[in-house]
Image (cartoon, rainbow, N blue to C red; front, side, top):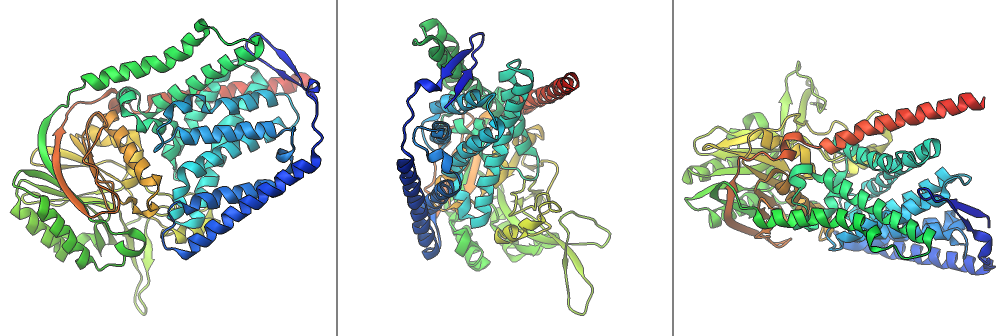
Length: 615
């Protein structure tokens, strides 16, 4: 079977595979492969049938995706099914994928994240120097990350089937890039800067995923700790990238313990456990102290939240707007008092009207009348209007409206938030972070073949108009920033509202696209991260739930059940404090980006020198 040379700092050692007796079970391996393929195809077929029979899929997309992947592996990758053969690496990759899933919200096993990458690092270690090591590593890494994506974000498929598959597969593929980059650099320069390059490449990948049009940062490692806000209060200093760094260094320290055990054939002593235990426990302890000693800051005000509960696939855009409007009014009146300072409706509460004529819309006039009855209150609501453009106005979201026998009109669509109040003009903020596919066509000229997926998501080639700057709403001396749905996943982006003076944040969203799956709960938890990073209370209004209030420590209050029509009131605080993270943003990611450029340059120069010497 061959020998494997493994390296450990200062201690190379030889693993003699010939000492392991081969197991001649070719027929058994074939049977295992056939059984796995059969079970995978069967699971996918049953799940697919159930999905075709019901309007909302819930969890059925999960067995479909897992079954389909198992069937593909059984048909096209026969080598991994050999009993006693290279399937060990396949099992290790599977373990990484499962551990990453178990550590991700809304599961309560976050400590597993500190060992989740150890099996994958071990695979890279054992493959180093072997033929086709890079290609094999890509396969195992892709398998691990695809499992993580499917198990944690299968619910994306509930929005649109093929678009969800595309999101899971492409994101898993992108995740393999930093691992492959680390492997290639290590092959060129050895173990110098080994761990620094691995962490830098991964953090650069996460930073890129926050800033390009194909953005999908849901599985950023820092988000994985959202289930435990009491343990990550220092996010007010580092942001989510502090969590990414914490997790990666923890994995590296555990991997070194494993190598120590492998080399010395003895359980590591207490002294060897000090670094890893200190790295994990000290930040946790500091966070618990911050959590226990943090006192809510700022003036206390009363707010009200409406959760109208219109199912988005078959109800929200089918029920007449006037019918929905009456539900909004009834719910709002049930919770408004003379002391209410903010009333918050969810994303896309109203729409399909001309933005330039917003104040003349009957529903807006009704809402303005309601606000006139409560002069201390401002209404925050989501709108999806359109606007006709002058011929001279250019816009990347401009699209034609062909009028038979007449000239062509140009118009653009929006997803925005607005503030209505008794004594102030209507204020609007246009959403800046758009959902790929549904709201923007990323890399349209290159990915033109994805137009059917964009159509399925209800998007368009032109996408929506977006804002480049955050804006805040001013009401009676108070400033509020509104993160619209997807925007609440972006830490530094939300910090922009605070730098514009926001004393409180509102998150307005429509999480019903994913049915009753972990998707809406994960999205809720990420809002808690924004509260910690900015030390701002958050008013969260979700169309189908979960609507709630989140305090400055990231604790969730008054969560409303998903899928129920609700309205409630509560109190929040206005805070003017600027945290270190709000001021400096993702500085850790920028350092990682600089190091990434240094490592790539250093590796390229070293590779060029080798070629010159060898020639």
